[in-house]
Length: 245
Ligand code: PGA
Image 1 (spheres, protein in one colour):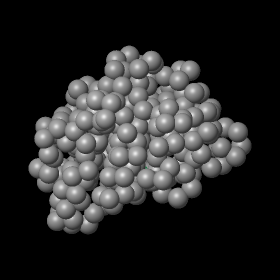
Image 2 (cartoon, rainbow, N blue to C red; image 1 turned 90 degrees about the horizontal axis):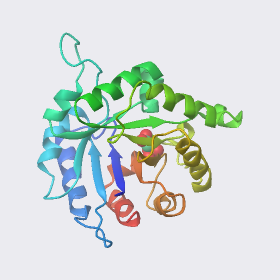
Image 3 (cartoon, helix red, strand yellow; image 1 turned 30 degrees about the horizontal axis):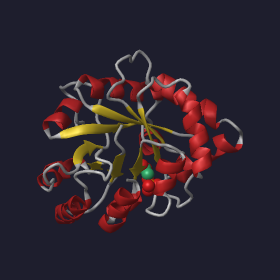
Image 4 (cartoon, rainbow, N blue to C red; image 1 turned 90 degrees about the vertical axis):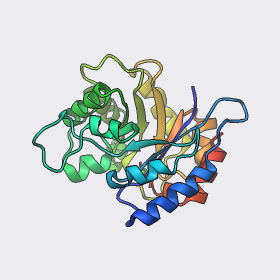
């Protein structure tokens, strides 16, 4: 199984020019082969409107393209929304679903996330399904229950999971600089594995840096990383790619 290093640019950068420059710089850091021979897969998820420009910066065998969100209906009168099929046509291979910022700011429930995952799989794309507990939930010893519920509800009535990627992202670790220790992350991964279908890649996300990235891959045994803030700095993201090999 190859390692997936995914960059979630969120609502950044502010201009097309900056997006092009960032994509071009990242492209230079993408290895074509790992030393071991197995490729590290590098994924960039820019804002929708930059997908075309970022796509043009892909070098041969370089990074792949993904989206940060989609709507669950296939087509029609849904003003302002983008379907999985539209994203596929734009060159995306992955779509993030259930990110905690979408749950928090846009009211996405487990049920909505479930519909989105079905739509993404239905379009032949790979969902990166995010799950994670808040600080209160962890402090009250509820982290495992919350993550288990999110995953079971999110995957309700879904049997074809070969393309599915799961990202464990503790909410309190996202964008805070307060990353989850690799030991705690590993413990949650081991819990998740008890009920997640076999073969699903599991990523860690939450304040990943070039300093801590290797711990999640090499010590805790994650299959990759979902990187937010650090993916906006090409040199730092390049180091994360390199240190995760
Ligand atoms: P962060 O974000 O790396 O900035 O903590 C991670 C994410 O939201 O996916």
